[in-house]
Length: 340
Ligand SMILES: *Cc1c(COP(=O)(O)O)cnc(C)c1O
Image (tube, rainbow, N blue to C red; front, side):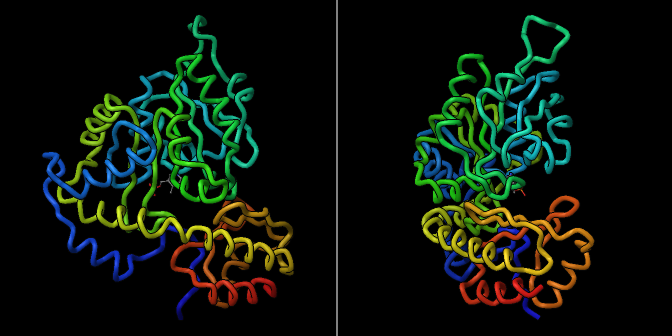
């Protein structure tokens, strides 16, 4: 049985054109700084976001964790939303890699305001308290249902961080989805954040890889941390070439993923098992089942009917649309979902 796989936008497989580009990519040893495809990818993204430099890494977890490590010292404190990927889904990496404590904001679908950040700042003259050093935002917010931040809110937080001498990092695993939704431009985000992590293996459809963007001296330090974490790769140009292909060819199609998510949302509103669905802005649909319906049973029934989704928290389900889902599959999924 071929499933309509809505578990994640990471399940996409490279198509023939992307594979051809990868096979033909010029490569070299990137640890010696000699891989032309890696350099080209790093330059492409740095220029696009008006950042000085970039670093290609195996995963988004690594780009985020390197950023946190470079921005902080042990016993500093990081401010982020309670739903943040860096806090929930990176294996406790903030504690393990950076030795930092975290202050969590109870935001709105993963988003928060500068006032909320302000109320989390520890008085630096009070030596009982951890030193606040870094704020992390996530756009779009994964656990927030693919929600998109208001650019003005981000600008306000950026100003507050500058005033306080804090760094401001963006987990932009799905930043291209956010920019597709609100029409914001890469350089606007580049101006707001000290560092940005971009995933090529989510909606953009690359098999692997994320890129960290920032000032030159920050990236020099990040390169050192990537090495000590074991993330420096050799002929990684084969993967970087897929990333370049994705940036050139797969950004325009993100809008279809968003339309597809809205179609799923409309079908789910009619579904007999569903209590409520959050209206999606991008490619993630979150919904809750009626009380008494077991998540495991429901997901098993969906699977029998050809649809894969994942549990997201105790009573929530997540579906993510992506490049490898066709309009026809969405129509088929909608028919099934509205009667399950
Ligand atoms: C997927 C994701 C990451 C990075 O995950 P990797 O699997 O390590 O590449 C980071 N942040 C968010 C919000 C994500 O969804």
